[in-house]
Image (cartoon, rainbow, N blue to C red; front, side, top):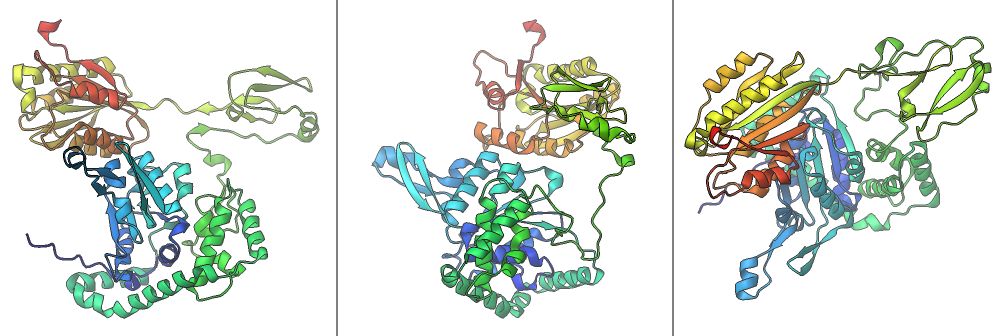
Length: 548
């Protein structure tokens, strides 16, 4: 078998702009225990190109590997597994190395990290912070070194990352599309030169990349000799307190990152200037108090900070109106001394006295008016209903005309759910693929026409269907209800574990899920029922005329 040609990546030193992201990556190569970098930004800004260019700073790929983590990775693939066949038959402990162990001393990259399962992200971040992990399988415990630079990228439009997980990333950078025409033109020219003749382009920047790699290696060797005096520790603590960060992780990371920066600059001692240079990397995703003077590292110096929303720009989520206080408001306010605790009391101003009455509503549900009364905020109307039908129309569903009953079930649910705020979509599974055959509609006749033209045959690929669901559930103004109609007879190359993982990865925008089991016959494999149980979905068998 002929080995694949080695991929040629864009040179690190040829990247135009993104200086903050480049510096954050370099500092993690100097000290991997910083805990990685999270790149948050617009699509098409070259995040992945820059991350992959790190391979040009790693001359020895065996010693300093670059591992790309697939978004659908399983836990066994991530941390490793025991070869059960060897264990049972040959009584040998054969370990299949996980990607985290393979990434030791190198870079582990996760694109769209916000779509990765939370528990897998936790495992990754634990290993990145500690530099090791244990594999516990089949009564066997193995220790692995796993000191790598973890890099995650995400586009906020595709979903958010839990604050707890964001905090676990050592550094973060915000990537925005440059508005400087000259910079954009330079990027385009560089890209064309690389695409037309990649080998020559890389060769032109090889010496520059080598200088950066040498500087990183020198910094790693002298990292622990860089001095940190008490004044710097005090300064870092003051910064953390000022930004109201939770815990002590920010204090520690300010020091770690500043020390790495000083080492990279070949300095012998950390200064306040070093801390200021890297402070935004540490505090961007942790600060609860972003002062007006704290500038985004990607923001133009001449750009004015956005003003707070005016009275006319109240959130459409909650139509809040603040009325102007009267002249005697302060006098009335002085008598208002009772504290509101735990959102357990509602407060009423009555004849100059303050009284309290118990209520189940929280404090955040109330706002003051000019009469110093407490009024309930007006909530936005309920989300519109959106029913999405994922119909398995594979060959196995044709048997005994089960597909006809599936169509009837869709029609029945649509009719029962119909009101002025309801819309419907249909995704069909056939021939191992998924097709979005009906885009959001409120017309029942459209559903009938789509069901009539439904293609059938081939195999079932639920994962392909879930990918379609992800693109359908982007509208947050709708409550997305997913109805999966299938007999559970998956492709030969699919399994229940992978299907569950695919659902959890791509269907985060779904509010409610129903699995309608179309499997018939004396002997049933029960995959649809197991699947419904694993994803905590509503489960119902498909009823035919003979079963009524």
